[in-house]
Image 1 (cartoon, rainbow, N blue to C red):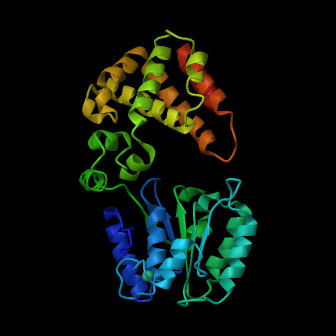
Image 2 (image 1 turned 45 degrees about the vertical axis):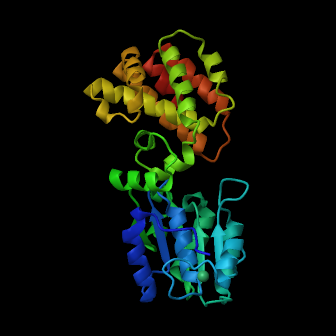
Image 3 (image 1 turned 120 degrees about the vertical axis):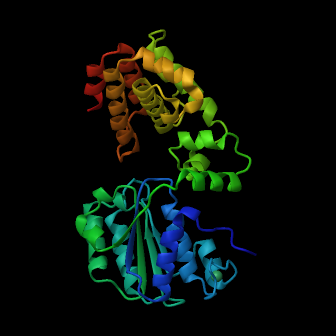
Length: 337
Ligand SMILES: [Zn+2]
């Protein structure tokens, strides 16, 4: 049976480089994959791990049928480890200590061991320092992948010990071709790709078939709040069961489109180009100051929502809507910062 995972076309350059270095036994012992989310950095590291551990040495993709491939698929390969945050949002020192012990042991199968640390910025200071020792004094025949969307949050000493690969989004043609080929059932692929900031994996993973309907709810709420027709608290309540980061991201995208359209009068520059009328209304309802303040505020809120604390999500949205309804840019900014 053919193995179903394949490399994404936008990884081709990195893939060729890393595979040839591996074959020539010149690969660094630690690789850092950085770049925005939804570029498939983790998938890439995982597929490389499977390929390097596959026991069919001539395979260009993991063969899917050797013993190593079966063990990896079952999650029981003894020479592969995935280190991720457990229960809390942090990678804990105990996990790194356990990893160090494992790295010190001899590989059980092909003689090669691979670990993926994802996301690497979730290591706390203690964990990062412990890992640093592994990077400074690498054990032979091991490969460590570190994945991060925030390379600036890693210890500089960790970064400098890794071979760094900085991932960028694919050009639009490649992204659209891939999306239409892999997901021919998606309607409006170009529209969704624009909304997803040109990231095809974000289209696939974030924008399910109900996304456009959910986006419409958010946009409608925003417009009614900005034109002071409703009680913002009641509007916020409507979203209590929604994925809150998505609600904030949608607000951000629409308000950002509002300011872009206001400044350029050009629909080609907006992401939600199918919502021209709504974006124009947002622009008309708000001053530039208000839009800029709201965008900054939402970015601060999103950091809180995606951070390690456990904020009261409904309260965050309620506060945002109340402040947006007030129409005072100072008030909007003060809460978020
Ligand atoms: Zn195999």
